[in-house]
Image (cartoon, rainbow, N blue to C red; front, side, top):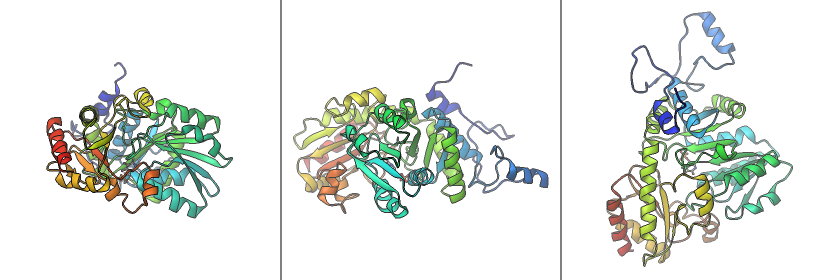
Length: 391
Ligand SMILES: *Cc1c(COP(=O)(O)O)cnc(C)c1O
């Protein structure tokens, strides 16, 4: 058979069928696995091939199916699944960074990632440096002999800053630094960082991969030898993914491509219609030609993704009024859901930061982030426009 395209693989990869020959993915909700003999049991513990399932903290067929699918979609050799996106990020830092090492990260990263970098890593003697996503030319000056990892999130949350993955990958190769990309906002349906030279790609599967706001999950994919090290860390320290969540996420991947097309089409439509609105000073969306990294977005993304942001001229107060005026769109912290979500970081998730700290991560007072859902786009637009009238 001809090589399958990724959107077919997302649907057709199934690693395990039981004797029942079920059509849909089976759920192996079991903490451990049994053996036919003492000899088989002894062999399971000496076997390095990991072909035998022993205990679901180590491996589980349902979790393996999810990993196999996401690795295929990202063009990766292998992967490790974790209980949350943060567990994937933390496991990656803990596996590849040691005391005395240095990590360079974009300053525009997810809030909890920022907390790990600034509060926890220094506790274990791991140094970090931040660079501005809009100034990738400043990275080289930050590289030290101890630099082991470059960490980026593209597009970033919530600023939608974009970095040229091919550019940073070349820099990392030259200096023998691991390039880790958080691909949560794009998903492999839109962007495959490994194709551009990333060493490891990770996700909060909680977002677009689940796509329906049900479960938490995380995953890291990359080359076999790197994944093997990560696998041993996760296996021994325990942030493993639950088989139930893996089952949900594996089924979700079957609709990822059509969902991302619809999320992106609606987000792009919102971006176009909101541009020039009297209450809005700026709209940001990767595929709008006014986006500062529009050319890079067009090069490495197949569409602009499902998130659009805009800046209300009235600042913090307008942001609050806008959220309160919404009738259909949900006010919640998640994103990448079938239901459209609005958030106002300055008065919620990032309210504890100073104005200056917020500016540094791209959060302005009137910034509204919309995660376009799968509803009819006209209903999404109608709700946003009526709320803008009251903000
Ligand atoms: C949500 C998110 C995370 C954290 O994932 P959890 O599943 O909530 O632990 C990491 N990176 C980005 C970009 C996110 O949006």
